[in-house]
Image 1 (cartoon, rainbow, N blue to C red):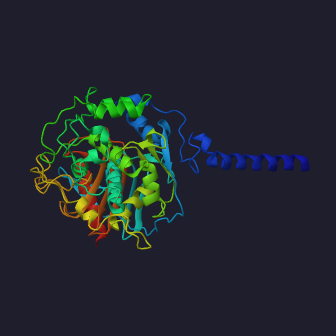
Image 2: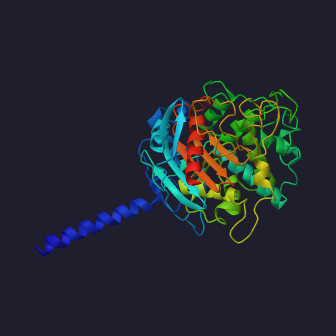
Image 3: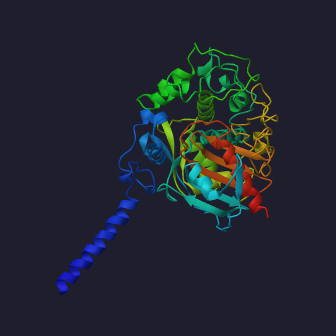
Length: 437
């Protein structure tokens, strides 16, 4: 009997030991530089070559395993400073969409939301994890990463690594000499007003964006994307600064230029300027084209929901750390949401402009249908949106002291504004109004 009991205890202890080992053995997820593996670690991953045509389940699995589907650079957390929690009820938060009323729970289901965090007055008021995601899941940013990159550009300006946003990028990135990008300034690249042609169509397999995706799925990624973006045959369609056109090619070039100006990868810049000084809670991974040298400026930032929220709080606080250190230039955040008035940025929906320093104006359009609401809540002049395809979002509103983070797996990469993007604006207005009471 005693021997059987000892054996049972041994098996039990061994089982617990194996579980602990599996949680901490970073070889299990293939990224040994991480302090611990995120959860879950899915066994079967979808083919990244088909990223733009994944089904819904593939998209969920693919987005939370992006950090191990591509080569990546880890940006390490330092002394963690978790966000305090003060839960608030959002049961009263309802929005009207084409004559019907929906709750937050309706919204989560309708919009394939896989994670959401609402931070009010510096405290977590609400958090949600869906589709098996957990507080340690590293979810990929898609183009939310662009807003992180533009913030790192601000840090480089503060440090003097970039002397002026009005410098031509050729000053820091000599490779663009002789191309359509040569006389584009850092500011114009940041505002997507370069005037250089780039086809961002996510549904066209021959678009520039689709070609970039295929470069990422194969070897020699940096050389492939570098040749695609800086192709001497790539033409201009407008004078720099005259017209706005969203461009992941230009965003990649901004990241490339920042790395050359600082002599550091995006991941290293992020770790040194924001991640460790601001007390982010977990390690993250940035999709790398050349590990230790070059990370992709257009997307590829992978982090936990809480750390997405902490980045939002960093912006909320104007890039000022708890010890008073200013990481960003004075007025940077306000300038970043000063929507440019270039052709195509101003529209009937958003007459004050659509785009800033790689941040969006995604407020409810002034010409929105009568049967939607609430139309008031987060005003366009006070609210900045980091947006990524398939519904990745960070919203920062300094006036309301509010940050909202969303992970999603929308069925379409870029749906009509009258669909999911409008629902997000309405839902977030409802949340802001509820928390303001």
